[in-house]
Length: 449
Ligand SMILES: *[C@@H]1O[C@H](CO)[C@@H](O)[C@H](O)[C@H]1NC(C)=O
Ligand SMILES: *[C@@H]1O[C@H](CO)[C@@H](O)[C@H](O)[C@H]1NC(C)=O
Ligand SMILES: *[C@@H]1O[C@H](CO)[C@@H](O)[C@H](O)[C@H]1NC(C)=O
Ligand SMILES: *[C@@H]1O[C@H](CO)[C@@H](O)[C@H](O)[C@H]1NC(C)=O
Image 1 (cartoon, helix red, strand yellow):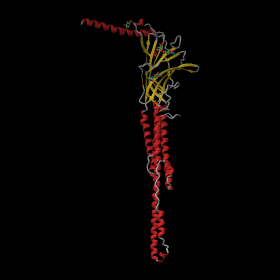
Image 2 (tube, rainbow, N blue to C red):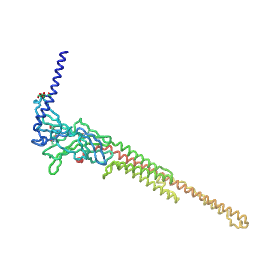
Image 3 (cartoon, protein in one colour):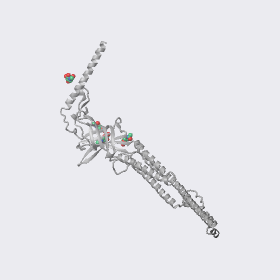
Image 4 (cartoon, rainbow, N blue to C red):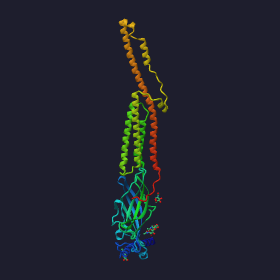
């Protein structure tokens, strides 16, 4: 027990001693290396300062397509050598690194040049840097950045965007500062948001010329893929259903005049609905020259429905015209439509007239002698006349009905034909539209800003 207590006290003393020493050594190191350090001076002696940069955290907050802006939280690291900040660890009980406030050392200055707004998440006095005994310095800069992103809307809503946060040196040229950007480490954290899937982040560095000197530039490129489910459920599915149903309604083989009027108003109603859907798409997109794929799809469907309504209206006019003229469809037309010819029912009016005329002639000599018989005969003739005209009317009505029926048979064939044609077009448009979803993602362009 006593021995244990002794060792315990000893161990505790050693630990405390060590802690105190480390604390003391840090101040010693700082006192020694910062004794003649001037942070305003660039840390280069023979060549330019070489800054290694990479991004370790990237969270897409939002992407406003119609304003062409993307907002992120990023955190990127910079590493460089400052030869003046070196020490020999052996002289300081093996301590090989220290942490000091950022404001004590020279920091490479880069600014986000495509930003609308960028905020450092740490204030100057809260940010630290890590110094290694070799003179190496590491800094981690968390930032909120709202940057311009040129949206390519051609394949919306199956589009893939490359949005960059581009940093440039405001003053130092490549003779004074160079940047070597490396791909993000495997354990870095990147994520998109509800609307965008972030599938890759790449880093590239380049040089640009300005006023005859070249300066460094670093781009952190976010590869974003849109999640299209929202647009498919809210716009594509209703558009397809509305168009399919209205084509079905417009060309559903039905009777003549009345329902056809309703068909036209059905078609116009669905056109209106689709125009509203097109408006939703247009509101989400920048007002640029290129129409997004979804816009094209809706336009095609609108045109399809408009043509269907037009054809239906033409049918209405043509069938009215023929029915008014009581003109039967010609045999050739019927044969073209694979319809059997109608059976011709002979009208009985003319035969009847003939009979009446022969048997009942009131001007006959025999009848004229007896006035009563004459008047009876006249009455009979009047009755016969009215009967004839009634029959003629009934026959004309029957004929008209027949003509109507024949034409409606013909137009039913047309209706079936156009129903199939238009539904095929409608399905084809949907298939062509959805096909784009399976196209491979495009390559990263050379110029993305
Ligand atoms: C720090 O080290 C010095 C000797 O270098 C010693 O005198 C002093 O007590 C130490 N300070 C603390 C707080 O232990
Ligand atoms: C920068 O990266 C290069 C290799 O990519 C490496 O040799 C060099 O030591 C790095 N510099 C710093 C300060 O980490
Ligand atoms: C950046 O580092 C790579 C090795 O990782 C090296 O090949 C290249 O020369 C370096 N670029 C600069 C500008 O130093
Ligand atoms: C990310 O992009 C880099 C460079 O273009 C590529 O080498 C890498 O395979 C990509 N990673 C994924 C997951 O696509």
